[in-house]
Amino acid sequence: MVFLGRAVERLSVLIADQSKIVFDKKGITIPVRSCSLMTVLAGLNKATASDLARELGQSHQLVMQKIPKLLRLDLVTFQPDEDDARKKIFHLTAEGERQLEKFEQCCDALRAAYQALFDEVGNVQEMVARTVDALNEQPLDQRIEPDG
Image (cartoon, rainbow, N blue to C red; front, side):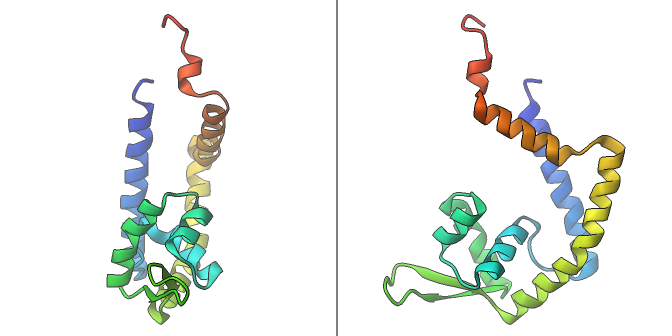
């Protein structure tokens, strides 16, 4: 149990690696770990990195680590903010919109695959969410006996 974090990390890497194979077969060039960012950006139409970070519940730094690859792949572009030249306003390119459409078409197949997996092993996503909630409610250090 001490290495639970490592086991969850291995699962995350495995899912990302296997999702990449599916994406390659479907012609999806969106990086696997950037799908939520692309989806949120599409929903907002345009956004700063801070807007994206807030919507995703991620750090500004993590969002900014993903942006350069999305720019190189011509999925996202930006313009300077008219009111604050330090800020960049990001939006999807036409290619980004096409790729997001391909991804969304693939989502039904992915959902079905996950459902079959969950039927086999139990709903891992719900279990992880419950675990996160429980640890936020009572952190690990509070779960250890004072002299343990």
